[in-house]
Image (tube, rainbow, N blue to C red; front, side, top):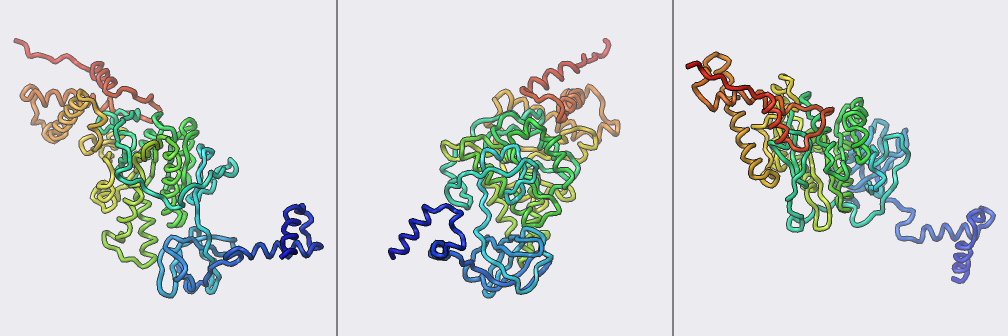
Length: 472
């Protein structure tokens, strides 16, 4: 015992260069202290028993692991990791984060400490992958101080702050018909090629937020740089953290990217920031969830989607929203890629019921050259009552009624059955709705609108024509 204490003191006081093979006593002491800790030098492990294109089975880990645990294995391309997605009596199923075509039978697999995302203020202006590793050329990421539990904790419903304060997005059609509040979760529903990514970038450029977190899930690789540098822009990117998982990455990386983005948003929310989370798109997340679930043996129930998909979506989205007293908020804008322009798709239908509103983009409007291609009649903000003033509410309802009358009579007017002067309300709609559509058109390069109702009134006044009265 005395020798051990003496050697421990000597080890603490001896420079690192003296810990050489010519000092066997200190080398032995270092080995003893390493293996003295409980479980030190020992790692739980198993061996691969079956390999498929997207998963592999490992025997020997069933009794010592839980769902979501991370394992590590060595292939020809170095150390890689995967996540346990199913546990059986004899083996577990692992979904790797990266391509696993070099895994062989009986290959050893060890339980790792897991993926821990610890954001920092220095992450703003950076782009990371789903595991929190930098993918830009700005060097390593600073690591924040780990506090609390590694698993995300959703605030208690009764501990959350109330959603009360509205903000301007600068996009006229949104601020007039579907105004937003801090802590709101709203979806952008659109088919492919209708302009949802451009609208998301316009909303991300709003100066109402301290931090912006952008999650690009299943995006085309060539479009990531264009989206961040051109669409988002240098000014907004300075306060943005981008989490990227492109379409060629594994389903596990696409599945984890939204969780990583939400953890980053929660980090800044807990520090009092007003955070904007932009997720593009949750449909591709659902596709990744489906791929992982079916690969682990779960049966599909709705158009190929297993039941766990519709459990995981609200679990993720409920983490957004206002924080507890003293914290900030996460305002989530979620894009929903509507498959085949079917707005009753299972994912779209499920997400619509979870969010606090939906903005619908229609292909027919985009084909007319009107961008953003928002259908104000089909779009709803469930918190608009907290954002509108009384006079703004009355005007917005009047505008919706006028647009509805205009669209309902489109076929009659095309057939030539409409005659001016027979219906004053329809006459007003025919005269003013096209001008309203012109006023609502906006591109990313246009100036932001700080008072959309005043801008609309000025545009209507500038285009107003005197009504011709019949000669007596």
